[in-house]
Image: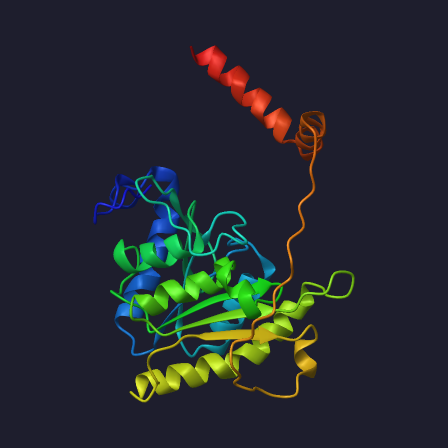
Length: 270
């Protein structure tokens, strides 16, 4: 857990016996990163650390071998949380085994993840070379960038002085599949590698971050084009429900059972 005091909690400084093997593996990757000239790329998202989009991107970067890959992402889905953060609260942080990468999951938002990665000393650098947020399941264009946790992950890096890219796939229900994320990762690599090249060459332009939207069939794209940010927006629709309907919805989702179990546990502890 991390409390924001500028230090590492006992979870990192005093590993439990069950965590020793993973801590050794993480330490070995950190030593390798410190002794290498390869750039350090931080990956985050808002779909969660186990989301196929993030995993496909991480796998593609590891296989390419042009950078060291670090991951700090939410432990569960945090879609549409925008640029929200978790002030005056404890964030839970745990290492995650992703072969070829150094990875942590947190209970926070995408913005929390990027902030934590750059201020809590969990990685061997003060700031990464580049932050990439995604690959998101669903497009993020127009005014939707203000709602998007994916875009916020890149924006948090940008306002911290680190070049950043957010990447989203135009997911089509009933048509798209998880395999499309592999294609999306493949077509994203040239953009990421070009950015790293220009950053290291000192010619990467400042004052912006990239928001990349990929078509539903990434491998059939017609090329890359830089355009102005659009103003499209899907209108929200609200539906009035009764208290009885709300309770039924909670019951159907399993939340009601979880709340009941929590209540029983709390009663037993009194």
